[in-house]
Length: 259
Image 1 (cartoon, helix red, strand yellow):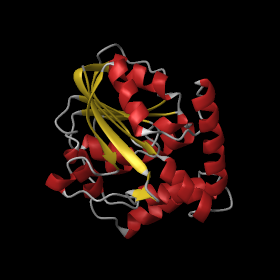
Image 2 (cartoon, rainbow, N blue to C red):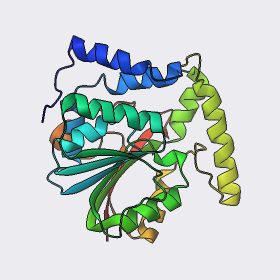
Image 3 (spheres, helix red, strand yellow):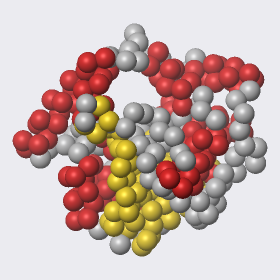
Image 4 (cartoon, helix red, strand yellow):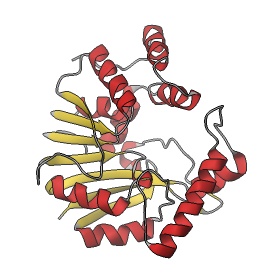
């Protein structure tokens, strides 16, 4: 297995070549940002969450596979799933480039997977849940995890969307953060009024509400906090984001265990 640690010029050029498969500037920018982070940074984050030495891990909503690559360096077998076939194709290309063993990618939805009951030792899902009917997402993960299996997910809070609405950072020809924030606010108002949540429409997630629902579904909440805050004192992990915006949750994460 060949692990990527230092981002070489050859690899930068390879990512540039893969980016031509993508139709939008937003997708191309996202590919370059995610694979512009060196593997040890992702691995350190995973070690803080105790995602290591597990037999079988699912990267749910794997995108271009950057977290999957870090997971396979510390665990025996990893499958990444994503609803976007182009992202799966690129993730497969990158796995071949680095010759990762026991790392597979499949097209699929996180709300209804093909895994059997109690099949997995861990599920890692970075920045995905807010685009799902999160209650179905959590129930499905509870079904396919083994007892005491780990679940990690991260999501955007109200602060993320207020910041996007005001500052419109990382805008490009194909994506407006302020428009996305408006959509999320509209969806969230509808959700909290009716209880209806639609797959693929962004939702503002509130940690106190999700914490309660995790317990009702059958998870023990180990810790919830801002991005990269879990076990930060021990491992010294750095967040990719600010801790809050004007006192509101920005990006937050949860580490849970199936009861």
